[in-house]
Image 1 (cartoon, each protein chain N blue to C red):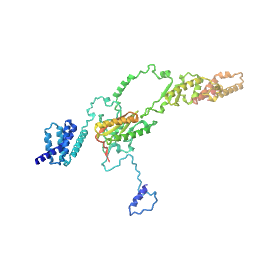
Image 2 (image 1 turned 135 degrees about the horizontal axis):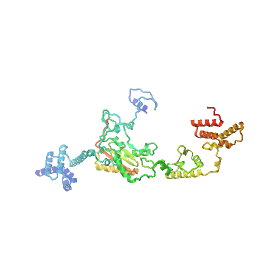
Image 3 (image 1 turned 120 degrees about the horizontal axis):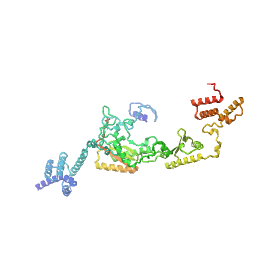
Image 4 (image 1 turned 120 degrees about the vertical axis):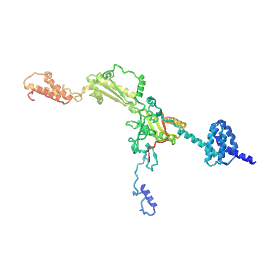
Length: 166
Length: 389
């Protein structure tokens, strides 16, 4: 695929003669780009403010970063790790939609026996009455969905803590 | 006529500016509502282009300067400023919208600006910490009066501070389990505890009164399900010395249970997990123990067919070693022409008894220094060859 794109790119330039190649060939005219891009903020001009969470790529987990979700499912001999993972991803999407533009950083999910504790860092974008309503709404809806007590501990910050500029 | 027109113009100017103000205060004071409603129909008929702005402003100010409604005065001033700095409004509706937006922005800025200081600034040094963190909770930087920093520092910098620090929130903390808090927990739990029975003051007493030990495991995990299939396993442990078994019953029981008996500790361990519930596994374990006990006391007809290979320990009587020893001794006696020595006499003699004990020790306990030397001595005595070292 890279080769085909390269050939097409070369064809665009009129003064370069290219050999007649079959549709898919193994000719590499450009070096392959094999960089991992998972959870990495690419370095820019130095104007991008980045939090501690975003600044560290995933190989720093357990070295410089902790875990955003704590439960016993991933311990040896324990069950239901996949169910916890699915619940986590749903809760994060739900929170992202319920508090639009107000999340300063990722939500931290902690499970203590049956209950789910959601720790949120919120920006002060909404008036307190609206915020209280949304918190209660989220708690009630999540506890009804998952049939377990859900508690949200929210902290408000004036703005997201900047770790560095990339 | 000209005068009248002039007058009308001035009135229209006035109303075009005061209309938004009046409409604004519809919400704030009921009193004003009726006057606003009055003003509306008047104004709609007049589409006036702005005359000199300061003139309008002055008119407004004069009206509200001596007013009893300071809010009206404030708003008038704001409207005047807005009108002065903005393009002259062709219609009153634009001014009205601008007015409403400035009011909303003003309220929001008030919300953002006035935020109470963190609780840490009002905390006494000798406060009751268990009331700040009564239960397990996430780290709250505004409630913990410690200057904590956490995180990998930027190059040439320091670790990030605690405000908005997600790393501090991620980790589990034990701020709710300080020693005074634990003391309070213990004091509260004491009412539900009973004393340990004074008669059971040692392991031997416990074993004597409760010889059968039942072990079950409860599994706690974080999740919506409390079920764990490993929780149904029940382990039963009992020492055979506590059971009423004679020699035959003990040997039969050990043969029946096989690997579940440990010879060093004399403990029989039964682990049951074939039933789905713990209660059922416990009942099955007790049933197994009962059946084993009763069966080991019975003697079946086919047990008489027990051969030498089935024996658990070496028995010298009727063994090849006994036969060989007796034959050798009889032959010795025959050559010495001592007759009429019966087997019973030989068996009862001391040299044969020594030989028997040493052979039994060797076979049952294995080869040790003392066993080998004992055997050597007994053989020397038996064959009467003391001269050799």
